[in-house]
Image (cartoon, rainbow, N blue to C red; front, side, top):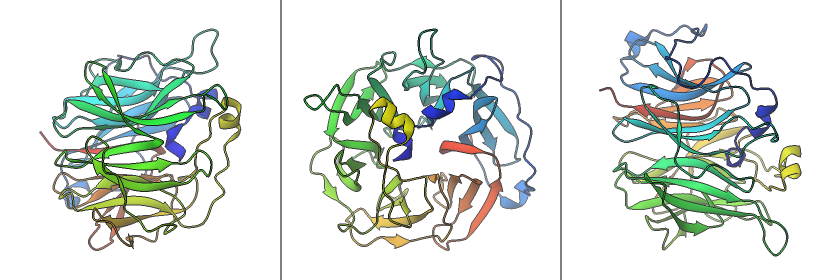
Length: 343
């Protein structure tokens, strides 16, 4: 899946707008007209905006459309994911800092920063080594832990590449929970863990549900129901899971960079996809949209009425009940989006 190695190839041409820790500034608004008052929305969307000269973490005020840059990545850094803590005070990033003089790139680690952008990100996991990287961060509902994918590059057949789901305390202590698994998401009540299995031989991934310790995992979809899935999220009541699925069978071949690094990653988001829903009890998935978009990732509004989702063409609002969709931004966004309640 695309975001297991998020945007590392873009380090070849990312450039900085400003150094970390500079005061937030408002980006230039996009040309898409939106009547924010008529929408009647509240809270903020926190997302990653990609520009040729910078990778930026942006907060969009849904009441008035004002944008604030929370963090501007320096030259050759990469922002892959951002998740806001349940109390709205912190943001955990999957972030690759700029490489050193003898490095071509740096694998991403997990970093914490204040949600108001007042301080540059600080490392939560050990500074990434050439063999370790961290992706797909998600908070526990109590804000005490971050769940993430840990990739460790192998050295050969006797020591293969490994993907594990781990729980990380705010003190940096890590607890492995699941092997051959990626992309953890925690249920609203903190009792369950949704994740994707990952087969290094076939490149296949499947959606699973386990308890919060990774025990008792069961598949939620019938075998071969969909070619490949990801970007899953729990509904606010915890009874269903929304997810992205490709609309056609795709040969998941590694990119040139993945082959160079010896990393085998399944492809999901580089092909036309749609939103689906499945019960947490499992069963046949229900298709919610007919959008055929790539790069999907979503977040529910705090009241559960809407899903804000990103794609390669911008930011959208989806009413999962009616299927109605409205575009609210045509920015070049990537990675993740999070909907934060108004304070």
